[in-house]
Image (tube, rainbow, N blue to C red; front, side):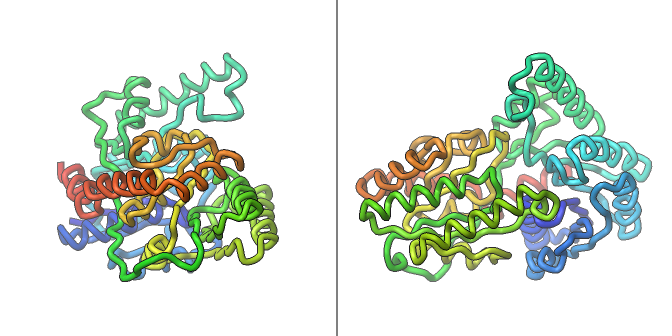
Length: 386
């Protein structure tokens, strides 16, 4: 069987497609292609796939209305049996253009008799859109538009996959039939790397895209406050650059500001920006004392970064936002508002309360054991073969 995954380069869904493709290849001998866009930095994008055995091909361009036709033409040429769209809000360009092209892709796939599945890495609600939350009329209009979009997806796609039950609840509220929705959690990496003990001093680890929504400036302020109060900690930022960074001035300025603020803390803050292998990330997690993910957005998603570290036996501090509340309970993570003061208090409490630390670390590791990538791939294979 040949499966083609469609994902935008330099994104979380890009990494997701890589891991899923690899597991399906290893377990079920699925021949996989990852159809991505021509990226500004596509060479680094390809690094993520060099060990998967899945073929990565740049076929389409963002902000091009002919992208679905380029994808379908290629999929037909290589003989794909199924297409799996890794949906992100701006994968084809602006959110509005992306919505239109995602529907066109499914519509025209019917002419080629492809089975087509969509993985919704995020589900939108009016409350998650900052610009419209203050105006009731626009908020109501947005709910109607989103309802039409998601119901159209349910009609045009053969199956919908979401990553947590909250996403399913939102889709059902829009009128999507429950039978069309498959809940398959994000895959977890097994943290079986040969690293024992912590690095010198208590290391706080952040990994993810360096973007304004990630709360990094607040975390840096919290670490600065801890240092001023003689708490021996240091912050390690293993940052990545999202595809949006190349497209928006505010994104570039944020990266520069985080870099500057980290340098001001000297040895208390180390930042490495670029591509990081899974092995590197897991080793760094093992060396760390606490993992902190202080994201500020309200999107209804699941965190790929959280699932990368979930099996490493570390206590995790996360923001009380939908992406974490949908996947974790208070016995598995410490929830905070992503402010410098609350982050400071949370880190300090885990350092001082060893019993709480162990409770959270053990609870998180228990959850990880039910979400390893090989288990998740089994559920995906059922959907693809259905």
